[in-house]
Length: 128
Image (cartoon, rainbow, N blue to C red; front, side):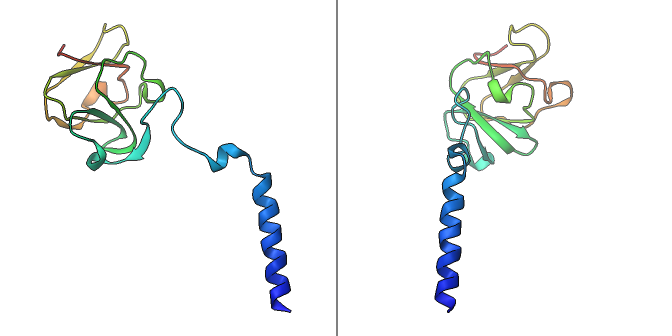
């Protein structure tokens, strides 16, 4: 009699799974922010400028090798950085480069200070 109950449960679960929206089964990075994921400092590869949503290199992460003036989902959410490139980068509070900025030297890793925390809208290699 127990096999019949198990078969009924399995059939019910299969029917429920077929009704779920496909977006739930295929969750992933947003299309306008490639490389966005939940990660930590240890996931930033050499040669990339990496940013995280939370302090200590936690939360959502994005990585860049070229200037970006539209951070998409990461706009005004960045709380920690790691510059794993050989050049200085500049983090801007405004996408036009006007206003606050933070210079991030090669190999610098840490939390974004004070007024720049959750206030970065653009990134550019080559210094400020």
